[in-house]
Image 1 (cartoon, rainbow, N blue to C red):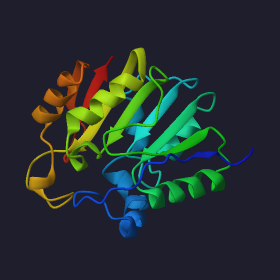
Image 2: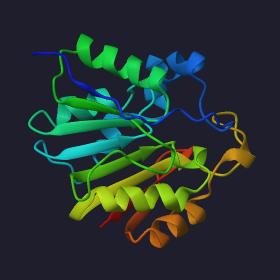
Image 3: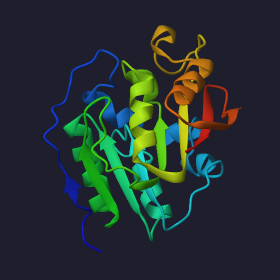
Image 4: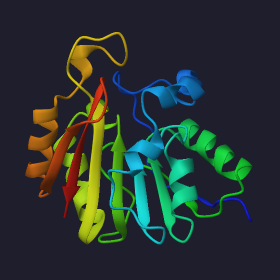
Length: 204
């Protein structure tokens, strides 16, 4: 299989204190991370199909992008991030895995380089707490989804704990739900995914 193609927009990477630093990207790919956040467990919550187009919004170095591309082998995965260095790492992982159904996009924080109604699903894993205006990003995800499409937010519970970002940098589950509702989503369900994170399932 040929290497996945990379789509670069004219967006510039914006510096933001809440963004996960590129120099620590390997931490996001540590095999031990599966003990906290297992992509296969997450997939069990999602109404995914192997033929769908799915956006991994805030994909980082590809922790979810790669297993998504393997799952949706007859579809397409859009990896979206505001840091080109993260996309470069994802591209390298797609190439190494010989996956050709991944397309990468350099994005602005609250402006997704995806066409209206172009995707079936949108996954935001630990990315909503990093943006200045969560509802603005979710409105963009809502715009890009086809009617009847699904969305999922996974983020850190806003509690003091030994893992994850500082408590003050997190977005609470209630605030995530409120932002999604403001963006036009229907709230399907909300769960504690594990001891550290929650998941909010959405539909357009």
